[in-house]
Length: 254
Length: 242
View (tube, rainbow over the protein chains, first blue to last red):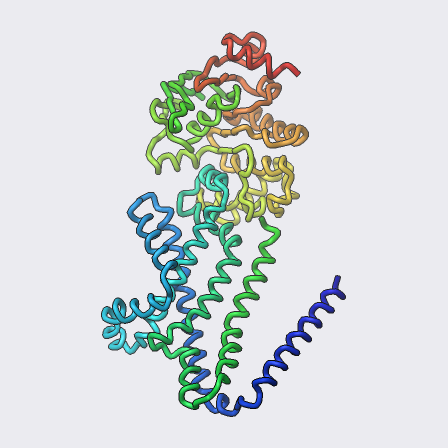
């Protein structure tokens, strides 16, 4: 078995290297790597902004997702329907439109001045909010599925031992649902990191924005997009690996 | 304890599960028997505070079962309830299944809850399995851990809803032994079961439920030797056939 794994790993790595070599050879002559190196400063600054953006939106989207999930389980129809409506609207319209309308029509007139006077970068903050709302809508649906997949008997058993509603969620339902939604949630986080590149349309100076700036300032080719891809990979790969690890460690528990 | 049930009615949509049920009896171990769909589970769930009746009242030793949410929660906390299966929380070890409610529901410290839980598991010969997850236990062991959890805070009444129906005969035996032991130690128990031999040996009262009503309630010897209602006669003749 181990030998087979080794052969597979070598074969895949070999094929991939060959492909990459051929690809870069065919483009090679026109590419000038000294220029992106010169501009490494702004590219790195962009990467840091993307990192901040992703971390902020990650926490924000968790919160939004949790609220939407609980809202959809509320006994009050007004809350249930509002959450459902919001969730469907966000999931069924393009992120690009949401960002443009959300920034220029809704949030910028509301908060830009006060954020600015506090010395905050209003585009970054509003960007995090908008991205949180978008990804949170997806998470809300993932979480709803996770909680709904916990069998009715667990709610009953929790009531029987005397847990109240909050305790039931906290000690019985969430820990079990979390294990089930982990893969889908990790996938959503990876999407979130990549979706953050769209925030350049409202002028957030993140990684993809800086790559475009570089390209237009240097009349360069597509060089900047290679470090761009690698930069995103550095952010997304740990999420994927971590989720895989956690999944393995939970496996024998249920 | 004295159990008084007056005109208890419960409907699910159009289905009438309990139809103005009456019972007035002094019980220690009450066995509910009868055909499936006769209302055993519904009655147990109402008695255990998991369901509220549409009308009627229940008094236990003169105290009515509450109807408000908070009071029902308090009522459930002073009793124990066990279902047919899936009682345990699968993400927690056997020991944690006992300690978590002790800490979060009854407010005990970690050390204290551990001591009580270990004592409870030891008493039922389950201490070796304390750190196993439910999936690593047999069905019988799972039910025994479930009972250990239900009685760890010395409940006033232990409710068991067909505790052995999902088990094979050997495991059924080990779980029934445990319930019998509890009964002999004086634990008040109300259970539903299809194990007629067990009902006869351990219960001090048998209530026969069919069509949403208690058709008769008497001592085991009277019930099994000469059932009065035609429904009970037919039920027993079928159950005892083989």
